[in-house]
Image (cartoon, rainbow, N blue to C red; front, side, top):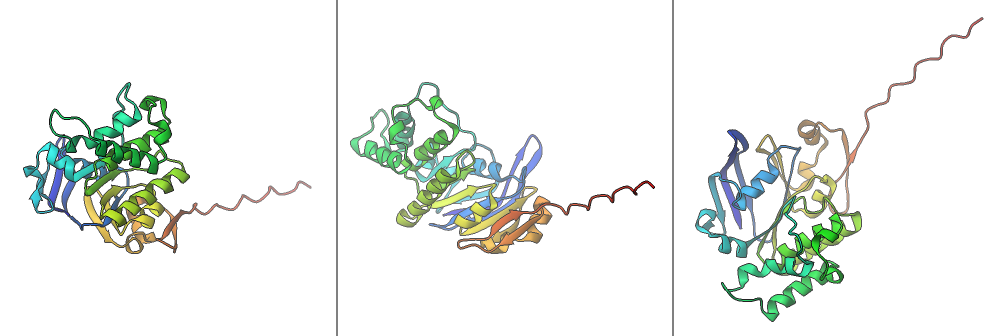
Length: 267
């Protein structure tokens, strides 16, 4: 569904993403991991059209440069890491913005559009907040609203930048299970970034490890989440434990030096 070749982003004369080749197949869930500053979020934002890029980016059979903003929104939906929260806007109205690419110019939302929004709100446990203004919600509740707007677009490609960073463990599981269910039911394709390596390995079909703007590993979670790779690129001490759906990454502390011997007893 998405192909990047020789993909690069330069910001303020600094190369942030460098010569990336990446393919994401239809229906696949690919998660990009990597240390802070690796270029993960910048890559996603460039695909969305927020940054200029070098190289080739093709969605389906169409170069991204040939898609206008409306066409791009019909084919790609996104949840940013730090979305703008409009003042005075209710949850229902905000999620309804996700239907904008499907509403004719100067037209109004239809009953079908409202039905899509209501269904998404119910599935994300947000229907009781429909009339609330966004700034009155907690960080985790707002994060689910941002995801709801993206899902309401019903685009075949979903880009997620740290989608569960503000969620408690229960809502984190609900959100990821819903995304996975939509992927299986409707063929949704997911390209995400995540910091939680265990969660990333549990849900993704493939992990892509970036460091210094380049891809340094790409493959099944058990091939990427290894102690050697994480030590090299994260400078982390970890233990890898096999899990039911993917490897679990457990940080380990440095060896604690033994306490100094007690001073000799005075005679």
